[in-house]
Length: 567
Ligand code: GLY
Image (cartoon, rainbow, N blue to C red; front, top):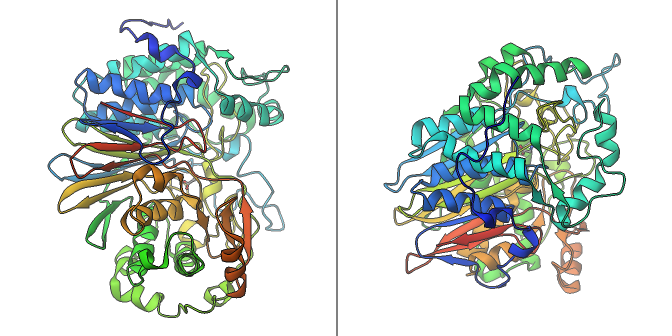
């Protein structure tokens, strides 16, 4: 049997504090300032783990590994070892790279696996339970990052997560609420009641100790990627699959490999945009949006005016239609990235936009969709004292993924298979459509919207940005850039600002509550738009380089527990 080795490296006492005591950055105009380094993530404890690593002499990529594993403990609904993600990095000398550690379809997956005998999609089969899980990529991705870029020992980076899991941490209000919301799902998805089920209901300040997860993390700490993809943990995953009819096999786990990709690049008003390439649609779509936006004076239109929102909507309508048709895993489908990013293509693509009238989405391309359901995932941004930058978005897809907690191993599996197009013309949980490019094929990666992004100005680092939010990720990252570049906001103001979203279909503009004056809403309706209000979405965690070279870390603390700190 295994033993849990903890406390080989001391963890500062502050890491065990309640999150509520840590939500310190309440300045609504300027975020946290760091003269040398900055981290902003979904959870104060994860940010502090990363800062500890930087202070020990680790670089941004060491801190990235440590934050990813810490989030897998303290932010279990989206932080993960059972999911995957994307990283865009820029080294201090300007070299860039993109790491794809997206999940893959299991070898036994098949194109019509979520259809019934009449060829109709079986509701929830791609979203809930064992068959919804893709082969996890997170641990292999972090191992690969460390092999190529790390300076501290691997075990030093994983140890804080082991200790957080073993000694426990306290729940924030939001974490308790999210657990309470999913109680029935946890019971339904697991044969044995998992720790997440609490008949009395979770509350702010409850202490959570996760010895099984601590054991899993200690295998990873001691054996690297093999501690997850081989041996006891791999056996536990496969046994869990067998319990619920899931498809992930021993071979799937052993064969999983992350991939280095060339980031996609573009420019916007003199800023260089470096973002994630396929199999995420995020970077391509973001650069298309920015190419379109450059043809208009958004600064003059003003923030969240009817003209600005109308133009963003018309751009997004066209870009998301392209996404549905052309984007998928480039290892399986010839994604026309060059065409989609060419200025000639985009000039033509956006040429039908009219200032005084909306375009009908079904004139762009036909499709039937229902509503966006959820806006989950998590993002963090890091800059170290040498100016190395990391922008990482990672996910289980829905909060707590497919809701299956691997028995004995203590972590949730993703439900990323829902990001494939189960059937052409039928939307996934984000209301996104797909086609051949994103059809299910064994070992293929499902299309993503994750958009970890870095901006340069005059060949120097300028911004690190990204957010969770499913389909809304692309438009939220787009607005974080427009808010700074066109509207002159600080990074914190750009993060705080109310967002809007359009994604071609459904043909309506989503607006965060309180985001529009009645006058602007009326003007949008007069242009033919339907406006629908939602409470909030996305959690941008971004860093801006200030004119004096210091860093402004902006955490989305108004929408959740996100926390920025620098030194
Ligand atoms: N699972 C959400 C995304 O990858 O976009």
